Amino acid sequence: MYIISACLCGVNCKYSGKNNLNDRCLKLFREGRAVLVCPEQLGGLPTPRNPVELNSAASEVLDGNGKALSNKGEDFTKQFIDGAYETLKIAKELGATKAILKEGSPSCGSNFVYDGTFTGNKIEGKGITALLLENEGITVFSDEDLEVNNSKLVYLNEFDREKAKKRRLFEQGEEDESYGEEYFDLTENLTDMSELPPSVEENVKKLMISLARDLMGFEEIDEIAEATGLSVEEVEEILEEE
Ligand code: SF4
Image 1 (cartoon, rainbow, N blue to C red):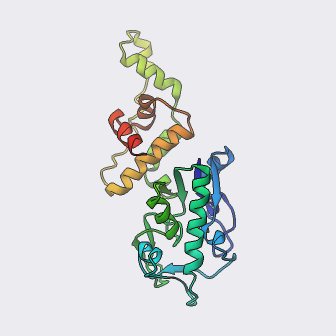
Image 2: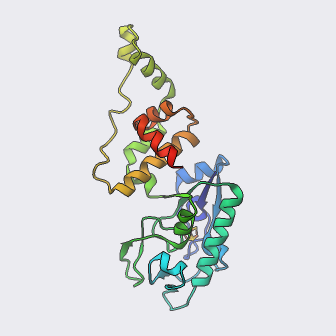
Image 3: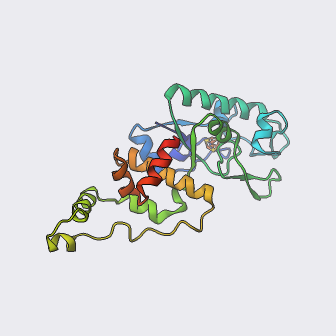
């Protein structure tokens, strides 16, 4: 079960009263694999509301040494922290181990947030809910992780299980020439992830493994490896960390 930012599934809970609809997230929700949360609403804030940014790192805000302030100077720190703990409570009750949260949000961001000046400047950092969930062992993906290596994810979405089985047969010594011609290299379109920062690359790999299991129903490690284009060792290592 995933926890997903409600705005990613079309709920108009953004500060502006709009949403951030993402088709992949909506698919997970429609399949009954996700529960939606909006930490800011769970913390008691209305929608629409003034935009908020953190004036310190999320860890400092959680420790009482920083604040979540609106562009009008309102202090919403308590609501942000309450919403993060409410989200954590829901995740624990559900036994959720994965979350897909909206990138850049002072609650939900997992790779970057805005710098507290309301000038549109992004800095590395996390939102309060994302940090709290990660501190509690929940793997947090961002909606942008879903897009970071698009060709890999398109490949994964279009993965053909039957062809993968044929590939395995072929590799196991199938002599029939036509069988070989029918087969095409499923990994040929994979792009190199070496340009990505290590933490993003790791997140993309975890996400691909999750999608291979949850969207496509692969259970065996070698199947997951085949579907994602990762090595069996990489898959094993990532699954052991979960
Ligand atoms: S708090 Fe999270 S779920 Fe709610 S609107 Fe902001 S990004 Fe979306």
